[in-house]
Image 1 (cartoon, one colour):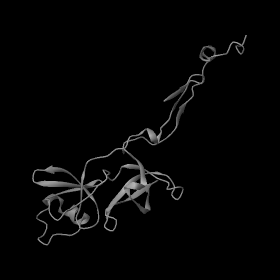
Image 2: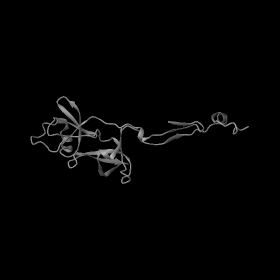
Image 3: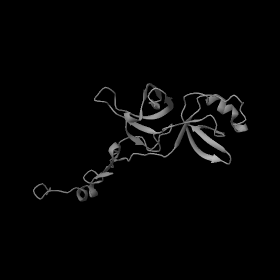
Image 4: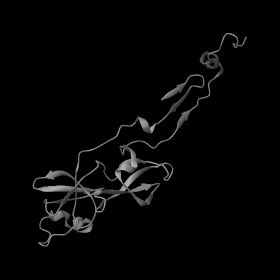
Length: 186
């Protein structure tokens, strides 16, 4: 927050370089195949959600345990299942919905701040590939963790410049301004 005394104006600046990198220690898994023995390993209330999300290349964050079941999250969706047929993958500490700043790569890409929309496992490169959402549009490119400069927490305000300039009355006008001795009006 910067205050300009002469104009009684407060301007709030946000700088991307001031934000610390946010990393989470999460365990990531994928379900590449559906088990042959049915769906008794999935919590009965979550069978419909699990059938829609798996099998595939989606990367799930394994968060908490619900008694004997593990909770697997993919963005806003989650399901509970026993730890079967899952393949652990190395993670970057990111989740769907996190804000990231994309590197420009010496001007080859446009540097943007976007949200992670999808997380898919890239078998060829053995890493997580991220699809980003910028201005409500999903990117056609897939990014790796090394394409991001800063990892920003999802609850930051939008980057805007807010100014308030009140109009002073005549009495406060002279007391608010600081004049040099040679410039002071008579």
